[in-house]
Structures are given as C-alpha cells and as structure tokens.
Length: 127
Image (cartoon, rainbow, N blue to C red):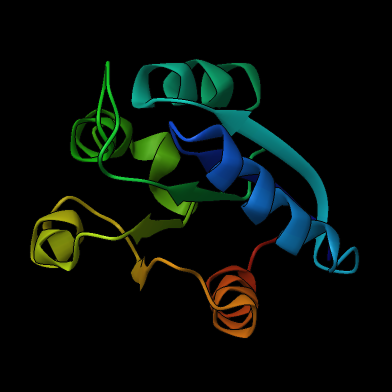
C-alpha cells in the first residue's frame, strides 16, 4: 500500500530531508504533501482528506504542533489518521501523547526507525 504523507515542519531543510528519506521507499509512500506550520497543515488536511499519515514537528511559529493536535483531534473524522511527532525536544513527549499523537521520534531521524514506525502505524489502513 502506498501512502499519502503530510510532512509538517517550519524548517525547509528538515522537510526536504524527510521527503528524501520517504522517496527512498516508493513501495510505502506514493505522495508527500508539506506544510510549514500547524495552520497550513490544517488547510492541507481539509483539502486532502485522504491523507494517510502526518509527520509533525512541535516547535513551529503561527500554530505549533501541540495546538495543531488539539484542533486536529477535536474532529472525530481525523481519528483514523496517525500522527508521528518528530522533535528535538523530548520533554514534549507526554504532552503530545495526551493530545492524541501515536508516536514520537527524536531528531535527528534514523531512516530505519522512521520507516518501521510508519509501517507499524499504517499497516491496517484501508486505503
């Protein structure tokens, strides 16, 4: 199954690095969308309700990852979409799990770890 993944990070280089990792696995990821903050991510999800997975940074301007999660998880339609948080700040782990994130990966990202967790959290998707 090839997934549609949304990468949310305010750092352009981080977004491109994550996209490069994902492109190395075309059997897993067919389309990559991106947003540079939580507000933009909410708009992308509204325009693309078939997003299968979100990779989310926490520390961002405009609307940070925690605020994004609060708003995103308040809509029951979004409960099927796994959110994996990618952050350098591991003090946020408990908070993001409380807000509905499925997983948390510390940056810098290990490619195998990221891919294995994506496979795990999306193994039962119907799309």
